[in-house]
Amino acid sequence: MFFEHAHDTLQDMARRLNAQRAAQEEGVGRNDPCPCGSGRKYKDCCMG
Image (cartoon, rainbow, N blue to C red; front, side, top):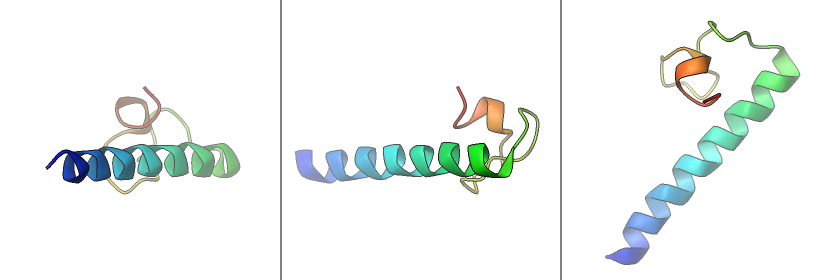
């Protein structure tokens, strides 16, 4: 059970890291949609 939770946490961390890298390369603004695909603003998702 612990490993299932850890796997989800690691996937979330990887998604945020990839979104931050994509934002740096693409020049995503704070109020643009987050590149991770969540549909939220970047400032409310992976930036913060």
